[in-house]
Image (spheres, rainbow, N blue to C red):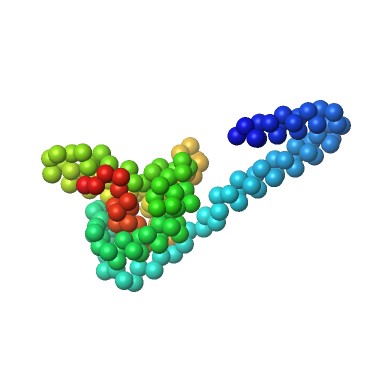
Length: 173
């Protein structure tokens, strides 16, 4: 960040000595260059389809709990699906780089619960929250923080991603 501040100060000094029209052209060029750099740094954000043929079909009725919990094939498919669709923002192997929430911590509050019934309810609530977030995305004040994946990823792919994330937990249940 300090590099950008130094570069901006240097450019300000340069443009202060030049004609206003030169300054505007230069400022426009810098703005475009920075915007292009930010866009390309984020990468291709087009959601990718996921092949879920190796998983049992779940049908049209959306489940409220992960039916693939501890399913090794689902974890394998979920790992690939996560890397194709989620890692850009949530980080490789679910270790967030700060752009989006660290998904290893998704159900960490459930891990510390002693009462098994409450823990199970907590995990179910997190499953519902996860599925709703993936299906509908995250939008605040009109800004899209996470695109909706419903219609792009099927239920099987979403739950496979959750099964993968459960293997990446910081605190085991």
